[in-house]
Length: 94
Image (cartoon, rainbow, N blue to C red; front, side, top):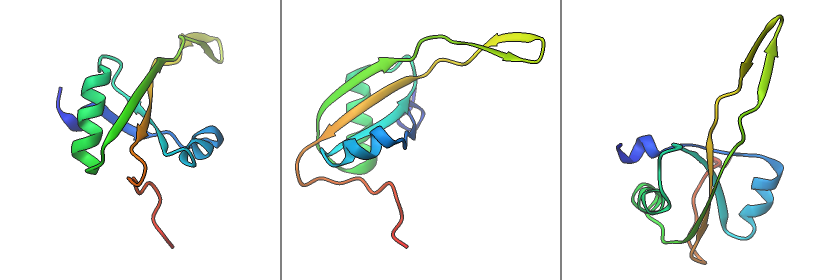
């Protein structure tokens, strides 16, 4: 698994925006990745120092499309805390 395959995309929600004030960033990551690999990927891609990594897996939920029943795909979410003073630019300044 390469570094760019581990981190999929940032999760931008209301809670994620509030966590930015505490220097915490939320990313969707590969379900097989560990905290150590997530930490090393974030540090190498964004050139920052990671203090801690918290992860959680989403539960499998049923979804219905017409008469067909199925399941939504699972994903793993990582909340990454950075050292004070470090910054990741998620949004481009207008």
